[in-house]
Image 1 (tube, rainbow, N blue to C red):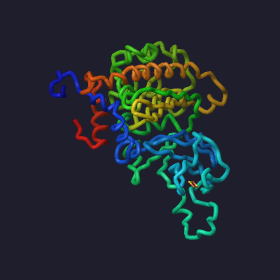
Image 2: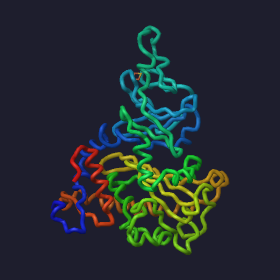
Image 3: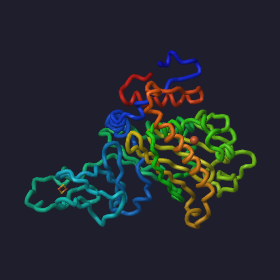
Image 4: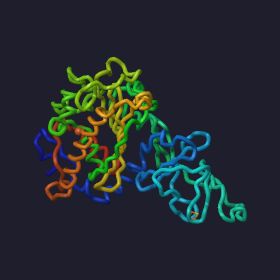
Length: 378
Ligand code: FES
Ligand code: FE
């Protein structure tokens, strides 16, 4: 079936192979395409609290080592030894005192990536300490997260990441008012989802499913029952129901409003997608920040942070009812994605499925993916 043979109400999706073919997944990961070409939100800055604290993260096909140097700046390197290529750090997180030492032949790099020691290095004075230091990756801190870009010439952060926020909210000031960088992680839940990363993006983009699978969310945000996503109109925030006191699982009282949040933003929910792997949800008293890590064609890890004002976290206030609301939403969404993934491999879906008009922006996402992979947009 091609899009031209569809009834006017429907739009064609990508073919099933886009969600199941390891070759397409590899292309998406590669340089020039998506994950190695764009800014990737890797870790929360507070996880690198002091110099020498590190995290390793898979970005595209590469392992990236992210750390904080003595001057407090965040640095990111390919996690590959310059001698014979051993992986420098195998742990997901940890801390070194002043240097990373390769466990194979002990080449040693300081926190700025410089080669500072190696057996017999003094006998090889022609070996450049920087030239044979760790290869660095572009880094930017924003919203309290470390973003990395593996491209040799990274795209402008303003024209990619920030442009996605502006496209959704109308301006970046609306986001700044939540002071996301100044909030603290009150709760983190990591979901291991057996679905292709694009199914998770597509699900987040639409609300056609809200009435069917999100009873608690539609109770708090009644307009979601109509199936029009909060992302449908620029600058639109979904309003809390009249009797709803807070963004909690039972609509009970939330916490104090984040001080910068305006009256217009109060009692509203905003959702933003920053391509390719970040979803942000804004409510008056907290922010829910999702980062996706595509692991394989049919598997994606989603790290979700619930961010609150520092005094909320320090005082140990009960945040469980707000965490429970979006944790349930996440599980409902990811169950739906996992239910869809096997269908992508069905011969019935070989040429894809269809989108209804309220999902038309998923069609735009598909065109964007196709364009990034070098195919002609449909
Ligand atoms: Fe790292 Fe040899 S591979 S020191
Ligand atoms: Fe949903």
